[in-house]
Image (cartoon, rainbow, N blue to C red):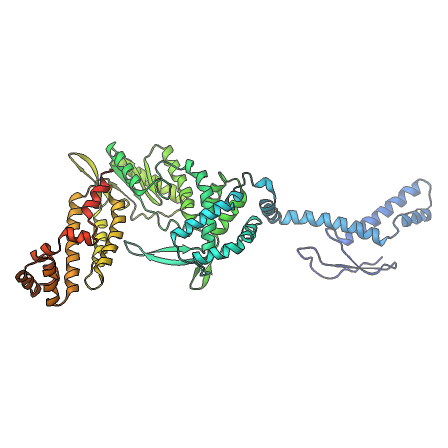
Length: 547
C-alpha cells in the first residue's frame, strides 16, 4: 500500500482536504480526515494485522487463513468508512476548537443566552424599559428638554412622526439585540473659569431610549445612594448640599477637603462601571444595552472616533451612571465615618482639624486614582477652612461667621458673573426694545434668585437692584435720542416744562443722566415696575423667607 500526502501545512480550521492515493483500487479519492494523521492510522491497522496473525497461528490456524479472515473483516466500505471518519473528525474538531479558542466560544454562547434565553432576564428590566407607557413618558421628557438634533439631524418633532411608523420595529430590534446606537455629536461650550466643556449629543431616538432606561434604573439605585449625594437626584438640589455643609460646620467640622476630578465624565472606566452595574441589574440584556451606548463612539468633524472610556456628558443616561460610579466613593468614606458631600463630581470631605484634613486628602486621592481609576487635579484639590471666603467655593456659595452664627453667602465670583450678564442685557447699544429687555432680565434673574435665595444677601441684592434701575433709565434715555423727543417725553411723564427743557438739552453722559433727579422723578420704580421691571429686592424677600 502506497500513500501520498500533499505537501501543505495544516491550516487552523482543519478544513483542508487530504489527498490519499491507494493502490488497491481505491483510485484517487478526497477524504475528510481531521484530528489524526493518516500515516498513524495506517500504521495502527498494520500493527493490528500482525498481532492477529500471531494470535491465530498460535491457536493452530494457518497464516493464509488468518490473512483471508482479516481482509474480510477489514474489507473497504466507502460509505461506512466516510461516516466513521466524519464522526471522528467532528469530535476531534470540537475538541481542538474548545482547546484553542475556548474564550471565544464561551463569549459567543453567552451572547446568545443573553438575548434568547428567558432565564437570563429575571427580572425582565428590558421589558419594562420597552413598555409603551414608559417610552411615552420618556418621549415627553425629551420633548420638554428641547435638545438639539444628533448626527442624523432628526428633530424632536420629526422623531415623533418616525416613531408612529417604526416604534414596533424599533422595540423588536432592541429585544433581539440587533439595535446599534448612533455615535454622539461633539459640541463644546465654554467654562466659566476658562477652557471648554466637551458635550456629546445623542440622536433624539437614542435620547428617548436612554431616558426610558433611566426611568427604570433610578428606582433600583435611589435607595442605594448615600445621603451625602445630591446631584442628579429627584427631590435634591445644590441648595440641599450647601445646607448640609452648614449643618456639619455648626457641629465643628470646619476643615474642608476639596477634590477636583479632571474630565470626570470622559474618564469613567467601562469595565469597572459594568461590574458595578451587574451587582444590582440582573437583566444582562439591559447591561449589554448600556455597554453599547458607552461604546457608541463620537463624531468629530465627520469622523467617528471610538470611545474606550467615559460616558458622553449630554446623554440622558450619563448622570445616573456618574452617580452609580462615584457611589463607591461615597459608601467607602461613609464606612470610615467621614462626612462626605457630593454634587455630581464636586466632592467635599469635612474634618475637625487641619491634620485630619491632610490625611483625608491623601487617602481620598489614593482611592480615586487607584481603585476607581480616575484622575485627580492635584493643583486644585486642597484643604481649606470652610470660612475662607476667597479660597473655599462650593457650587457658587461660601460661608461666613458672625455673632449670630454661621450663614451662607454668595461667592464673589458668582456676583461678578451675574453683574456681567446683566450688563450685557442692558447694554445701551444692544438693548433694543426696553419692554423686551426687561422681560429678558426677569427671566434671567428669576432663575438666579431661585438658586441663590438660600444665601443671606439683603444688602447686596438692594445694591444690585438700584444699579439695575439706573441701567434701565440709561437705556431709555439713549433711545429717546433727540432733545425735542426727550423734552416731550419728560413733559408727558409729569415734569414741568422748564425742568424738562433743562434735562433734555443737558450735555451730561448717558450714565450721569440716568442718576439725575430729573429721570429719577420721571422714571420712578413704581412706573418701571408697571412697565414690566422685575424688582430684585421684593423677589428675594419672598423667596428667602422659606430659609
